[in-house]
Image 1 (cartoon, rainbow, N blue to C red):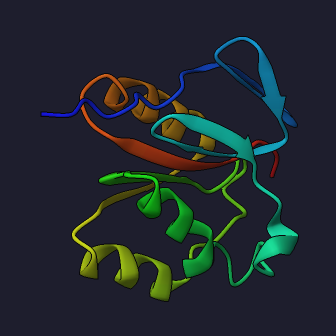
Image 2 (image 1 turned 60 degrees about the vertical axis):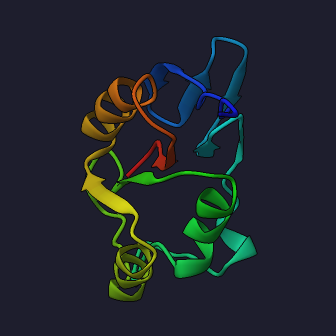
Length: 124
């Protein structure tokens, strides 16, 4: 059986900054098995309301995530579109929607157990 690449570890979170594997930092990040990149909301038209779009999570699933952790921001201001959760459910993907610090903790625990992806918003 082929071994899947492990999802990168979040090593530090502070307001406006998320550090991944101690070497890269992002304001907002997309993490998935084998990699991480800046999460640029302009790519999909994401805004705090209506929130995380289906297109935001598609890349995570395409890169092998079977569980997805979505952060709502440190102050819980980022919403998630119902269509996004419906898409994940239809694809058989387990989804968690949490405040950012809680999302980071869960993601870091899960990354050692299964192919996990996440969207992390490091401010409001």
